[in-house]
Image 1 (spheres, helix red, strand yellow):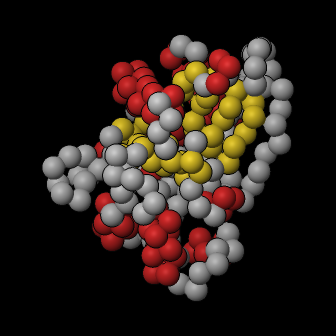
Image 2 (image 1 turned 120 degrees about the vertical axis):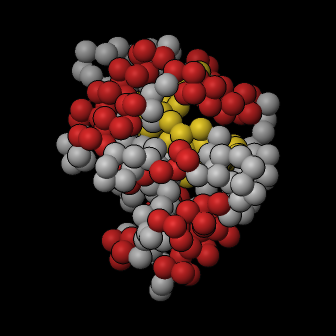
Image 3 (image 1 turned 180 degrees about the vertical axis):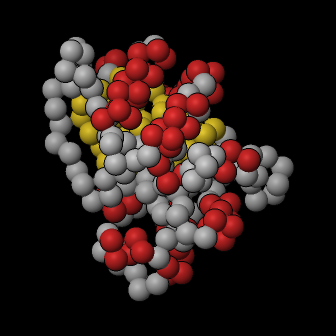
Length: 223
């Protein structure tokens, strides 16, 4: 799939999501830089092709106390939740890729971003609606890693796209992919997504959905 087609599907997906402020969606579209998305997508697909472990998760909501009640998470405090999530994330090797499919944190920012710095691996952020400030900025773009010698995320992008097994197109988006009725596909797209927390969508003729959110898998998905 070429970049323009992937971008048109992503734009259509945003148009179908009415519960989020339009300025957040505009900020997501500003991050749709072809070179960055293609480079990050190639890094992920190449690692998979070489048999390397690529990890994926979504909706961690590090630092967010209210998510425990909202999603019935099995923790009695936000500190216990943060520690448990970091323990799970510690299985990622230092040279392995971890794709976080949006909403990485939602607590007090400075404290929560320090937790993100402790996550190992080569991190790619596919932005979600909670990864932006009220003014439309994505603060993760400027963050540095634990040593301060490089960026916290190798890429911060609105989506990833690559050709998977048997030529099936793989799209990674925070919101579940929405495909126009007029759009025809030979093979259903494989869509890794988050956003729904405990919601799981059935496959359609056009999309096979894989919710990689923590509240569905209670851990990490290894591709």
